Amino acid sequence: MTERDQPILEVRNLSKYYEMGGSFVDSLLGRKQEVKAVESVDFELYKGETLGVVGESGCGKTTLGRSLLRLIEPTDGSIIYRQEQEDGTREEIELTDLSSSALRGLRRDLQYIFQDPFASLNPRMTVGDIVGEPLDIHNLASGEERNERVRELLEIVGLSPSHAYRYPHEFSGGQRQRIGIARALAVDPEIIVCDEPVSALDVSVQAQILNLLEDLQDEFDLSYIFIAHDLSVVEHISDRVAVMYLGEIAEAAPSERLFASPKHPYTEALLSVIPEPDPNWVGNKILLEGDVPSALTPPDGCRFHTRCHRIIPPEEYDIDQDAWESLRNLKLRVPDASSVPDLITFGRKGELVEDEAIEELSRLDEILRSAFEIPSPLSDPTAEDHLSEVVELLHGEGLDAAGETLDELFVSPCETVSPELIETERLHQVSCLLYDDEYRSGGLEVPQTQSDAVADD
Ligand code: SF4
Image 1: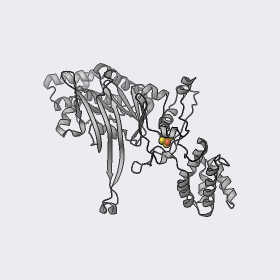
Image 2: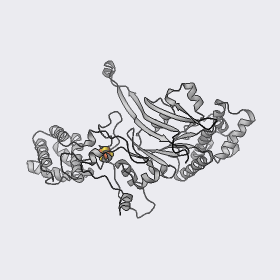
Image 3: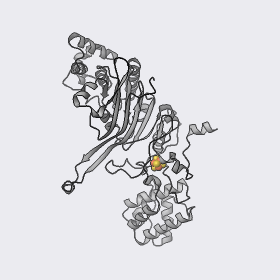
């Protein structure tokens, strides 16, 4: 990588919201519902590097990629592209300020490779016309010069020049993705956003396309934003990786460091389930419970708190992480249960607990603690009193009262405080309260990864 000191693309506070059609009454009252697909995202891209952007389906990564090139209009934020001039200097261009025609001109520098090689190529155009179309749009070549350039591009991406006369349906998925890459390369771009370019392909073909992209990067000094839902796909191609969760960046770090020493609990969980080639590998898998919450109603505080295995215990209680996780589990499940017997059949991690009649308070207490693996008693006397209060309410008044009291008495800072993306070391940023001095000083343990442990030895 070169020119490390100044990024060629600098994104600040980028957000994309979609308005949802609410009910008729909502529209009469002027109430809007917004899906916050991307929320206040910051990152930089340096010349010649690949930034991997990873997250589960629905995390906003494709919306982010498309907003960057204004294929969809961002709602807010700044996207600065430093365009190279003929004299070698760079001029700052704010992409969000550009008119449509100015933006069209800039598409020479900023290209996009789409996820689906089956849907992204016009089936009625020959491959030659698909690859040559950007040359026509930007008046870069015509006649025999254009045809020669198309043949050259096809060869560069590993196809035959004779393929120019065929149609997309005559090609395999991998070959179609090569056509898409040739088309993106036609205008000699500086940055390419690769939107899940290999996710629709077989594993062996994936490796070929990844190798091709790496070769092209070396040959043409390209910079990539490489979007994927699978961390293992971006591991080798990325210089840095940004992990997204529910529209926000949870962690961003140089690739090697992120894989060796993840700091955010979400990254830690994603990495823990990547299978190792060793057939005897068992690993220490962290299974994320539940689905990604709706972007229409994202959780308050840290957006990951409903699934986080390291959620910070309430500051007022001296209880360990396991006890807190059990209480949190109880708190999360109470609103879903419709009766006391239903509640106790939920059990921890979905295991059914025998459905027993509950007549005595002490019996309910016992069953509840057993179902949710809550220690008896809790190490903190106040927490124990509060749990007893919840059990009494559950027994006497039912789920709603117990749920409300749990929500009032057991509150993690993660549920109320939105973590900032903070730099813990150069180029390593994390959005998690565990790395915020205010919460760390409260005696919290920052998770120690394997490589940290080795370094400490
Ligand atoms: S802020 Fe809390 S909930 Fe969010 S990732 Fe960190 S520990 Fe987990």
